[in-house]
Image (cartoon, rainbow, N blue to C red; front, top):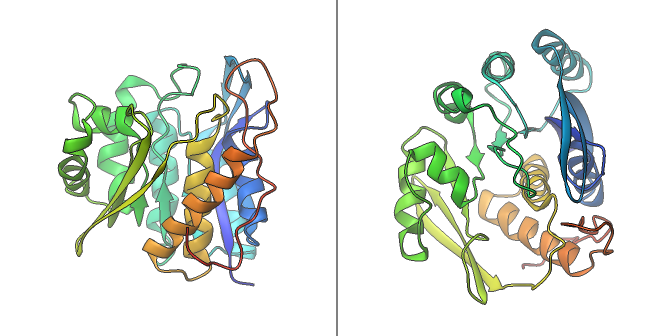
Length: 267
């Protein structure tokens, strides 16, 4: 079966983000999701109320037993909350360089709660990002990675190229934090840049959108889509999921992961 995705991420007890969103996304796009849980969170649509980390050795064990038996066509990383976890995950990834990895550099929840220790940013840059087939930062995450201010719309391409210099094969810089009626993401690779643009959907129900997009891209890569195709299908899937959000909770509600864009027919 093509489309096996090993997800290394934190659990969201509210079900809208984290490993729960990842599993739903991979399944909705006809992939097979396996998991290595990096942390447990107590959270809902209004915030993160507690985090319990998983021992880094056990995270490695989860990854290795899956890879040794089931295997993976792509790996997706999400919340890796400290340097020890990033080092442990990177060590396993280095042992399987043939498997493409999508790195979502999760730093802050939609509620504003920090999900990455400050001193772990350097480890993320030094160890994990150079192993990535593609990284998927939003604008605040890009600013942290480059130790600067969040870019403006006019600076997105230059910022994506600067992130590319950190060592990943590709960067998808997400523009959702900018104001305006249009939403633009920029994909930067060694071959050049490509912009993806849509009208913005006016909704508060965006919990887990970063996790969902990265997992959808990983599924596309696992199914042998070229990266621009994987990004286009992932964006189309997420757009439909946002539009069909069930309106749960009293804060940033989850999207509807049950929508499916298949077969690929463009955004």
